[in-house]
Length: 191
Image (cartoon, rainbow, N blue to C red; front, side, top):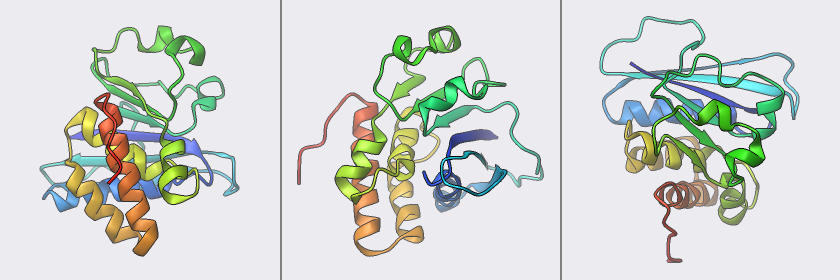
C-alpha cells in the first residue's frame, strides 16, 4: 500500500487533490481511498487530506500516520505544524516551492531522504499561468506522478477531466504536465 498525506490551507484544493489522486489510481486499476481531516472550514486554515493506493482492497480507515509521500501545498506550514511526522525513511516529499531547503528551514528534516525524493515545484505559479488562479493541487499531482512513479501522468489527466470540465480542466492538465516536466528538471515548450 502506498500512502500519501497532503498538507495545505483551506482554499488550496487539498481535499480535491486527494480525491483526484484516488481517481487517478482507480483509473490504473488500483484500489484507492481519499478522505480529509480539518477543523473549521475557512479559507487559510490548515487542512490535511489523505490518499491510499493499493493493488488489493483497502480496509483501513484511520488517518495516515506513516506516509510514503508528503505533498505540501503551503510551505508556511513547516513552522506551524510537524508535517514531517511519521514520514517513512525512504519517503517522498513534494513541496509547492522552489526555495532552497535552507531557505525553508527544513534541511535537518530532509537530509536523510534519498536523492530525488525531495522535490520543489512552483505549482502555484504554474496554476496561475495555466488556470488563472494560484491553486496548486492539480499541478502537484503531475509532480507526484513524476517523482514516485505510483501513477502515470495520463491517469492524472483523466482524473482532472473527471473532476473539472472545459477550460478549467484544460488549464489544470497543462499545469500538471508542466509540473511533471519540472520534477525532472525540464521545461515544456509552449504548444
